[in-house]
Image 1 (spheres, helix red, strand yellow):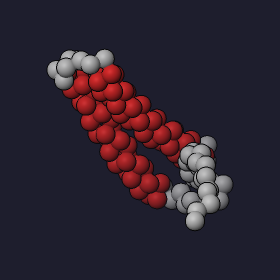
Image 2 (image 1 turned 180 degrees about the horizontal axis):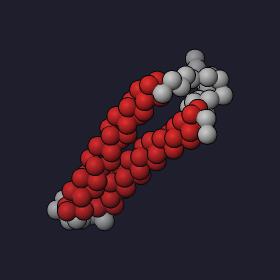
Image 3 (image 1 turned 45 degrees about the vertical axis):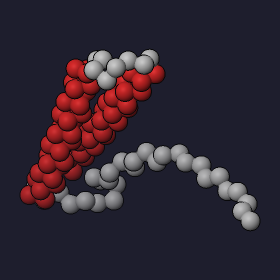
Image 4 (image 1 turned 180 degrees about the vertical axis):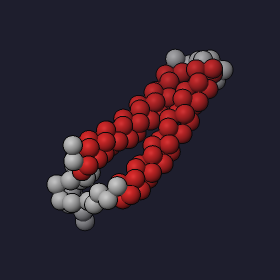
Length: 111
């Protein structure tokens, strides 16, 4: 199999793994925020479910470390790509478009 196709397959998995780690971080931080809001909404004391919050912070830290490891792997794979003589070409090794956040701008008349 041609090296460029193998590299593209690996790159595709790399990009999807990086996106999955980022999404897991988003989900975990949103969960922590919801837990903190829920505690307040039910008028529970600060010590209520404190261990849960500690575990969530540990999980977020671990996800951060996983993200850093993925960045390192990405860098190493980029170097390996060059050592194998695979050059980026149109159509090959293109990064997937990052999902653009849908934002709406509301304009209002002022003055």
